[in-house]
Image (cartoon, rainbow, N blue to C red; front, side, top):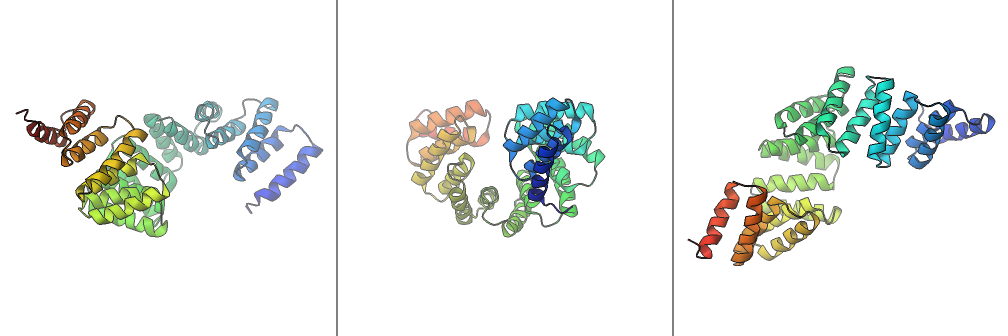
Length: 311
């Protein structure tokens, strides 16, 4: 395969003039346009092919992939479901459908597709990496680590695998192992906001607050107005006793992602340090409603109530 998609597109344009309304030509050209990132053009060709030759697995699976790229996830799911009925156990269909299901937050359905894909095409690094990510979303951190370890053996020194594994190791409280993976990922793919955000969190857990702040500052430049980065940076600034800067970050995070227990808990502790005890109590009360019986919240709320003489 020469991967000369532009040349292929030009040839298919000529074929379409000589033999218009041919479903096969439109199928192939639609797929080629997809490879050229012309998703709207690809969709038009595949729609025509589907009218001329309805219920064809090839058309449906590639149109589903194109709709996914156009963020029409519900439409993509409908096409991929039909393709799976017409031609079951197709690894391409399953891999694309799992991505669509993930975007629709159907993580259990995503896992089912990836399990099938793994049986059909075992030892595929992409499948294992994706399944590791999904298992993390389902809080199966040990299962996620096992998949990502296998993916790393199959494709070592891959930034995406290392980033995902570093994130999972963080969840398993293996902060040193997480840092090693994220450092490697940063060398392979420098200046990536996700890597910097997770590494900032890890450095925070390792009490390297200055290093954490540097990573989160870089992440904020690359991806401004990200609630996760702002929440994490607010926590780090609190540890560095920059309470006013911390408050500014968590206030922004609260606007971007309201009603988050971590934000309320963190802001409550910051307001306590700024002697705004009533404001602190209000935030800690909200945190307790969203995430009850959290030891950190209860401890600081007890201190705040004491400062308010509610013995």
